[in-house]
Each structure stands twice: as C-alpha cells, then as structure tokens.
Length: 545
Ligand code: HEM
Image 1 (cartoon, protein in one colour):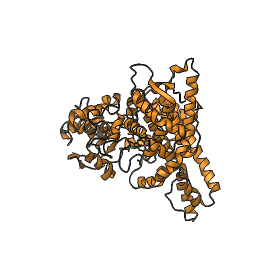
Image 2: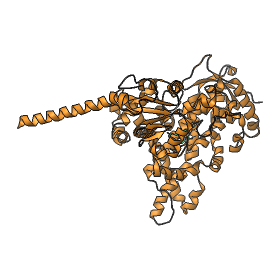
Image 3: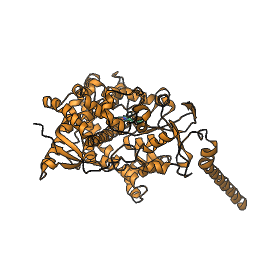
Image 4: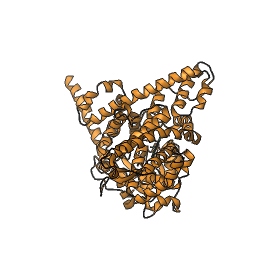
C-alpha cells in the first residue's frame, strides 16, 4: 500500500514537472516563435528566450531604444520581454485614440503597474479604473479648475522666493560671486515642488528648502533615489508575486524590514517600505489635523467646505459627507474611507512633485545649453516681474516665449517618458489583431520626437516651433507628455503654471550654464526622467538694476 502511495506521488510530481516544462517551453519558444498572432509584426530579434529585450530596455535611456525601433521597423513594433511576454508599440493617432480614449476601459493599466504605483504613490486615482475612477475624478476635478488654480498661484511664491534667496545668498558668499556657484539643480527643483504641492494642496508647510533634514523631503529623496532600470525590473518581478503588494504595505513588513535589508536583491524593497511608512505617517498627521479642524468648524459642513477647493478640503469633504449622510444631515457626495483619503493624499504628493521637478530641471538644462533662448526669456519676464514680483496666473499665461520654452521642454524631455496598458480582451488596433493580455507600450517620448510629425529637427530643442506648428501636428496625439483621455494627467494645468512661475523668477534672477564644457546629463532609465546625477549647473547672479 505504501509503495502504491509513493508511486502515486511520484506520478503526480512527474505530471506537475511535465506541465511546468510544457508551460516554460510554450512561453519561451512555442508562443513567441510559432503561435503568437503578433509574430509577423516587425520588431527587434527575440534574443535571450528568458529575458527577451528586457536587459537592453533596462539599461537604455527611457524611450531611446523604442525610438530607434520605430525608425527601423515602422509605426507598429513588437518587442518580446521576459518569458515571452509581448509588448506592442502603436504610434499612429487612430491607434492611440482607440487605446487611450474610445476604448480606454478595454486597455487598463497592467496589474503589476497598478501595484507598483499603489505601493509608492497610494491606491488612488493612478490605480483605479472604470466607475470608481469616474467618481473619484469627479470629486477631484474642481481642485484643478482654472478659477481654483488662479486663486492658488499666489501661494507658490513663498517657496519660490525662498529658493531665489537661498541661491542668491550662497552665490554671493563665494569669494568671487561673478564666477557663480554650482548647484545640483534637480535637488533644488525637487524641494521647491514638494514645498509648493504641500502648501497649495494640503495647507501644510514642509519648508524642505530651508530644512535639510525635513522628514518628508528625506523620505521622498530615498524613494526617488531608487529609480534605476535594474530596480524597476526587481519591482516588476516582486509585484507580480500574488500577495506581495499587500505584504509591502503591511505593518509586518515595516517591523521586519531589517530582514530585507540583508539581501542586496531585496534592499531596494526595504527602502521603499521604510520611506513609504514615513511618508504615510506624515500624511496621516496632516489628514488628522485637517479632519479635526473641519469637524470642529463645520457647523454647516456643506456651506463651509464648498468654499475651499484645495485637494485636501475636497477629500475631507468627501470623507465627512459619508459621516453626515449617516447622521441623516442630507449632505450628498462620494464617500471615502480614511484609508481611501490617505491613498489620494499619497497619490497627489507622489504624482505632483517629482514629475514637475524633473520638468523644471530639464528646462533649466536646455536653457543652459541655449543661451539665446535663455536671454530671450529673461528679456520677456524681467519687465513683468519689475512691475509685479508675483505675477498672476493670467500674466504668466500671456508670456509667449515662456509658453514656447515650457512646451518645448515638456515635448523633448517628457518627465514621464512612457506608460503601459494591457489588452483586457482580444481586439484590433490599427489593423493588427491584439490578443488579450498583450502589453501596450504608450510611446510618449517617441511620439513627442517623431520626425513624421515634428520634422527633421524633431530631436532638437527649438522653442520657436510652437509659433508655427507643422500641418502634421495634432493637439491630442502629437505631444503625449500628459497623455490623453479619461486617465490624462489631472494636474496638467497646475504643473504648467507652476513650472512657469518657478522659471520666470529663476531666469529673471540667475543665469544658468553647464557646470563644465562638454557636460552630458542623462535621465535615469526608469519611470520618470529624473537626471541621473541630479544635474549640476553653474548659476550666476543677474544684475537686475
Ligand atoms: C510636468 C508635470 C507632470 C507630468 C509630465 C505628468 C504626467 C502624467 C502622465 C503621463 C499621466 C498618465 C499616467 C498613466 O496613465 O499611465 C499622469 C497622470 C496623473 N497625474 Fe500627472 N503629471 C505631472 C504633474 C502632475 C501634478 C502637478 C499632479 C497633481 C497635483 C498630477 C497628478 C496626476 C494624477 C492624479 C494622475 C492620474 C490621473 C488618472 O488616472 O485619472 N500630475 N500624469
């Protein structure tokens, strides 16, 4: 009997082994080479059957390899990643319209991406889809309305003036101030954008510009510092393990993070767990303060909170609406739990801070390398700032060269160079049958610099192109920096006006130069275009008299 039992187990093990072997064979060879309906789509050779083109992608500058493929293979490209997982790039407007707008529900963000975003930026707007997304977006839209942003612009200036003061004092303290001083501009942009988002969105003064050990700034520094191709690959692997995203967010993981630190493979995960724990604790503190403020002053909640349209007030209102409705007060609204409000707070801190900082740092880099455009910008902003040191939303919007510079920088160096979608069911895009489960690469940087749209100088910085756009330009599908459709960036207008106000004050007060001749700055091969070396630039004072 015992022998029979052992034989059965052996049989089962053998069957299991054969199944795993077949699955591996299927994924590594049969599917990509013989069975996939996409195998005729042109694209780079399959190379390593285990990793596909992944190693090259992970070590290349974001979007550059894909741009080469599009040049070589045309507007639809297939690239096979690890274990035969296929990614398809679609470049044409009709295809992008289908994926991002008309059939967006059939092309959601892939689960591993939602989980990575959820772990590092909360399970908020960036991770939900369908009806839940629609409702959340409705609650948040008023915070980003033009009247609301007009009212908020003045709040940016405390932080920007602090930055100008810090850079001026440090430059003046040099033995020969006329030689200027080198600053890691990305780090300063990261601090100023963090202070701005905390103040305008949550009414919370971080003051990371003046406080080098600010807890929130430090936590984000550690988190953002993790960005590299190999780390992203590790995260994708980890987040694809069932239950891992839940574990990452648990108190248990925080309490046992020292275990993870012992393995070099898991150390980045431990840093993420630690940083997110600190960021959540601070956000929780802000939220608790605002909730108790609102509860104590809300004699008439609906009237009181309707006036305030900053992000936190809207969230608090949604949170309290649930309580009030329970008490039968009749206040209607989308209900949010404490946890959901926290997730939104994390989303706006994460999504609204590093992206704008990268955009600013690259604009300064491009201006440092184009002194003529920089001088032209200074000539435009100085008279306005002489007349009004804190220009309004409208005044900033009317500055034409500033507009050209910001748009051109966001086109050439989009802070989010790509994003992903996944086919939830089999369908046809641009005449190509796309099977369920296929990953779609949304080629933000590739489209933004596509010669078919932008002409031969598509890969160069030329702000003047915005004065006379080519006939091939389409307002929705030629510049994808904020993508398009229901998931398009909710903070687009805020980001642009914030960039304009920071740049106007910086360029009026300082000259920016590369820190040495022949300097090369590269973005990290990761989710955003954070400059790999924090972008050292030489900063000289401008005599405004
Ligand atoms: C230059 C700065 C910025 C750039 C380039 C940028 C870019 C993007 C992109 C490309 C997406 C789409 C991601 C995807 O669907 O996979 C996105 C979504 C989003 N962004 Fe931004 N963003 C910027 C600034 C901001 C700011 C300032 C905020 C808020 C304060 C913000 C909040 C969000 C949110 C909440 C989403 C998710 C929207 C949704 O799915 O409904 N972003 N952003």
